[in-house]
Amino acid sequence: MQKIHAILISLLLIINCHNPEDKTMLRKNKPHDFTVVYEWSTGSLPPPHYYKIIITLSATGGGKIIMIADYQSNVPNYEKSFAVDTLELEDLYQKLVSSSIFKKTPPRRSTPIVGGELESIDILANGVHYIVPETIAPESKKSFTGIFTIIRKLVPSESWEDIKKFREKQFQQYHQKKDDS
Image 1 (cartoon, rainbow, N blue to C red):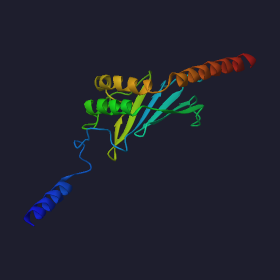
Image 2 (image 1 turned 180 degrees about the vertical axis):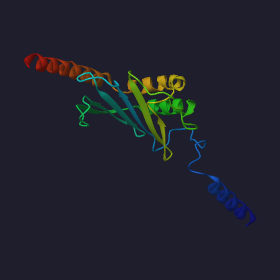
Image 3 (image 1 turned 45 degrees about the vertical axis):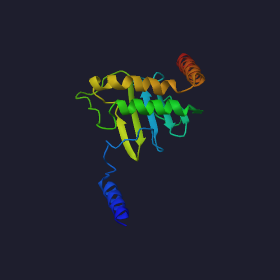
Image 4 (image 1 turned 90 degrees about the vertical axis):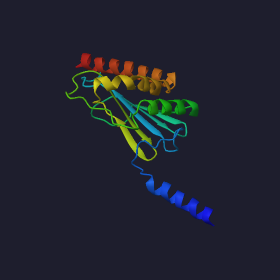
């Protein structure tokens, strides 16, 4: 009976001491709610040069890529779902753990971004959102560049080819309209 009491007391202490906001209590394997939303955009460019890519990955191995080719619309010009190998997702999760994103928020830039591409990640893990903002400080961004590359490589090459073809067609249509007017 004393052993049962000791076990129950130990369990109560463990449960009561766990703080869900404690970002140091990480699992060794990706959690069941692991989700990554990666966004990339060209930055401020005039039409037809501006576009945005959104890649979503879920713990179950589902992925989606969306391209939006206009400032004035949130309607995707291209959208495709794809499967991601769970081992690749596990590898991505381990790289995120190594990056320390789950322990501290990366510092933001002290000056506004002028020109250039923008990238950000919104990660859900263990019920908590972690964000690598597009305004991340340059010295911190270097540690995430490899993670951004891994995420982009998880998208099948035919999706990137489809986006490239769409962009070329968009340029042709834009220049044809300019020439016609």
